[in-house]
Every structure is written in structure tokens, then in C-alpha cells.
Length: 90
Figure (tube, rainbow, N blue to C red):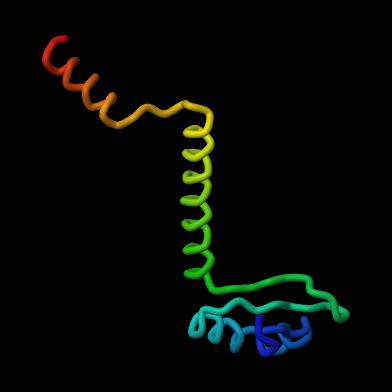
């Protein structure tokens, strides 16, 4: 994170509307400090929603990988063969 994206809480209090505009425009998060320590990260809603969608996809991928490692998946060829057999009465 660039130093220009690190601001003390007093800056946030004094410039909230301007900060919200910049967040939406630049789509870069801002780190808020209090007494010199990092305390919060703020970002625009669109970036937050994109991040949540990405995290959800990563969780699905991790779950699928775990199931594959545990042998809980079947080759697609076997699944298609089984479905065709059911369709044809068999």
C-alpha cells in the first residue's frame, strides 16, 4: 500500500466525503491509523463486492480440490456413461 493511502483517523473525520469520492474513483483501499497504529482499512463498495465474489470462488475451488484429494469425485466419462445408461433405461 502506498504511503498516500495511509491516513490518520483525524484525516478521515475531517475529510470523509472527499475520501469516499476518492475511494470510488481510484478503487484503492485506504489504511486508517490511530495513534500511529494501523486500525482499519476502508474501500469502495464495488471493490468490496468483487473481493467477496473472488473469495467465494476461491472457497469453492479449495473445497473441490479437497474433495478431489479425498477421492470424492468421479471422472466425467464415468458420470456421462451412467447418465446415458439411466436415460436409455439401463
